[in-house]
Length: 329
Image 1 (cartoon, rainbow, N blue to C red):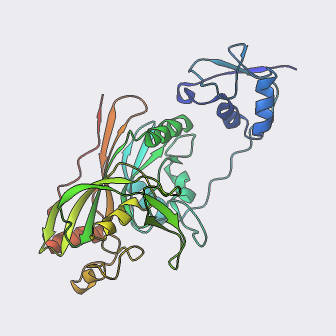
Image 2: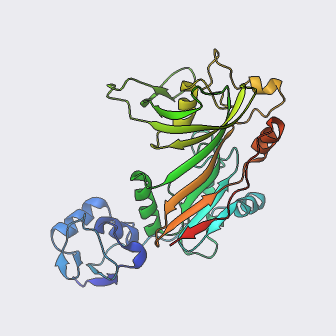
Image 3: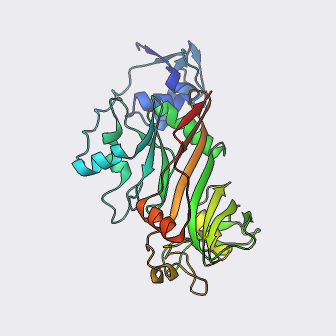
């Protein structure tokens, strides 16, 4: 059986051997890759290697004739207005990373009844790259702000690992009903996913609940309006679904516009309507500081969406403009 050799690129460094094979030969199932490695038909630098072997740039991978790579999928058809809006939302771009200021109301991924979503429009963000950008984290449909995309497969793996390792420092801004007491602190409250009349949602739980997961958020009150509304800075130290929304309810300060989680006995989100404020969710991913895959640290900030700018103006909150993206070596 004639083998062929390919060299591991810089972008592919540190990925597993089986993932490298799947990337280059997407028609080969995992079971076949495991067998080929086990029998020594796939080699790294001439030696037998396990599927979990982490690769280094410059290594030679010898493989037998395998299924040819699948034909690339045709580019999806995207409304020209959506394409322009997405490209206008770019706040940082280099060979490795693309950062968007995600608009309000755009789901990141599809689901039941969701036909229009960011994941289905990523081809318009190739911008000359051979690779389609890849999502490495999520924001809720109605949460705005900093959303990070990887421009190459290798970068996607590195950024996903950084998120799992909590190497990202995330800062959110929220306008809430009520003023937390104390005005700053840490919320350390485990959460779990539950069913209910409002569909699946996140709920607080006991620390000894086997279905629960630890969730920690630091918060700080940046300003307030007559103790009825407040501007909070939120820093999630863990990444649970809807963590910030549930934690704000826990300190009796639900986020404005959060109909899913606001409680009827609290100074709830509908109070904002009486004052003429937007009923849209007031949660914004303001800032992200992350280790750049090519070295150094990248800091990006996103300007507030229009409905939150209007609320800030009405309430007299003065937000500084977003800092230009900065990469420190």
